[in-house]
Length: 291
Image (cartoon, rainbow, N blue to C red):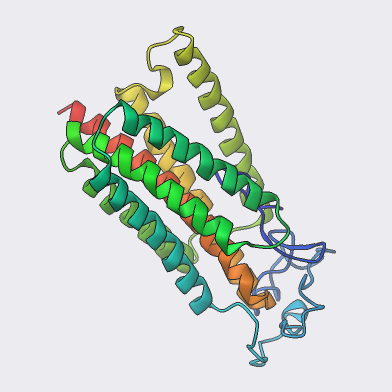
């Protein structure tokens, strides 16, 4: 089951023609006694041809501390994620400081968002991660976020700061719930969640068209109770995709994914966190408008 992102269709960790996603066996020690992994014809290590792969994982045996050279580790994911999110933050700060709120700034924000989208799509269809594409995406996404954050702050003072805190709270709570085992990321869980996300995006696209042609004034994304409900639902979708990201990272490390695949982990996490931040920013504005 290929993971996805609520904004962009995203690839998972891959090797050759294989895919390390939700149709494969989970990390070491999880396959034994797990009805999801047992009896699954795909429950094997897709990195088996990798000399650094943990071949013991596909047999469900405890890991034997294999050689770690050229194999993805949690440190790699943390470092790449910090670089990617740091690039987003720098781009946002510079855009906020250098681009005052104006029609020109809105145009630059829209252009930056479009470029970020194109770069993300190119990376999504590439077989291997490209740090240049990923950091380029992060930079242009940062410019977009900086402009819209300044726009929201000019009308709802402090909204971006509250949105950042809200994003941190959602991501932290999701990680805590995931690590506590309260959420089990199975193939069915992923399929149902992705189906809901696709339906949500289709509905939002139709709503956008209705608003663009003047049929509806804001529609489902209005600054009212309905808009708040949609915003909360969108944030919950973002939390769902975070759990898929966490699962992919765990599986990639357990399977011995190549080190450069950590860029894909950073890419996916960044897109999901950006999604949550934008929705949180809008939600803060809705609640502030109703005060």
